Image: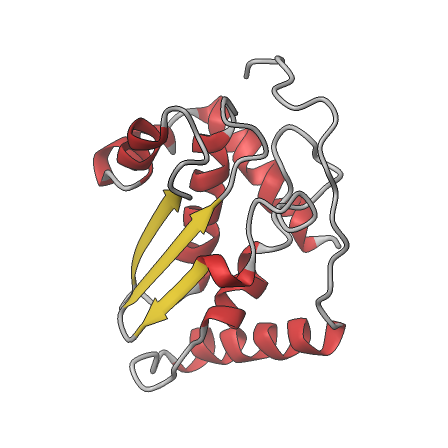
Amino acid sequence: MDSQIFNPNPTIIATTQPIARRRATQAKLSLWLLDGDDDSKPIDADEVFDLIRSISDPEHRSMTLEQLAVVSAPQVTVTPNHILVEFTPTVPHCGMSTLIGLSIRVRLLRTLPTRFKIDIRVKPGSHQSEHAVNKQLNDKERVAAALENPALVDVLETCLESAGRR
């Protein structure tokens, strides 16, 4: 992976999630996976946000996407069978945007019931290559090809693994 730093001095925000909310979300999702009856169990935007807020930033591994204000609860929209996550790169020229979006997609695909269609997008106006990034993140073939790249998968797993240890 490229070692270029796109935002050497990011702004960090305080996180607000109570630990009880995180545990409740994890317990609910564990029950989905155990009983396999995911069609009758609703999920809301806060629960989706709980899943992605702790993903580590690929450039600043000790910080989460929430701490860097890349993701926030208002940027998640949930309807009965569709989830839309908009994220905001820390700088308009961020070269890690595709990797950030891919990590969000993989976290949701691994965790949520398969009935959901998942769309990941850069917040409009927040990235100079917004259209290209969105096209990459929502094209099944491009995502599948990216997940066949061992170096990319290693970075992705590190972002997702680090989040689970917090």
